[in-house]
Length: 116
Image (cartoon, rainbow, N blue to C red; front, side, top):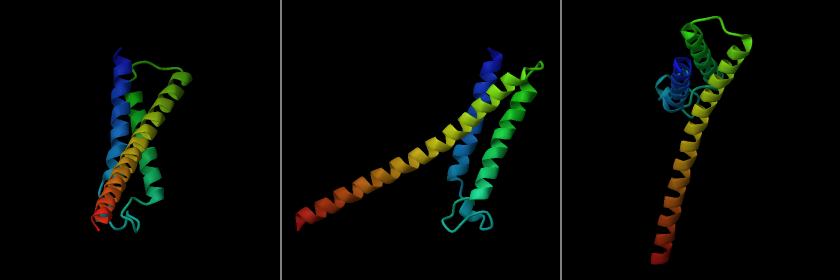
């Protein structure tokens, strides 16, 4: 049970690091940000890969015994899925917020037009 709990914790940290990076104020670091204030693509991919590698290293350090290559592949797949899920959740929250703002804008516009 300890190994699976450790993996869940590591996956949670990997996902949260990607979520944090999604909303980090990169515009404060002009050399790292593009014109829209987001982390430049190459740097974003590098960050994501480094976070997954960090998770794999944390898992490998926590492994008490030598593991089969298939277990290592499974661990890397799980960590990659956790990183991807963290990124997808952040984008989904952004899309939901944009949709909610657009709905509110349309309701306000409809209200103003009906007052005319």
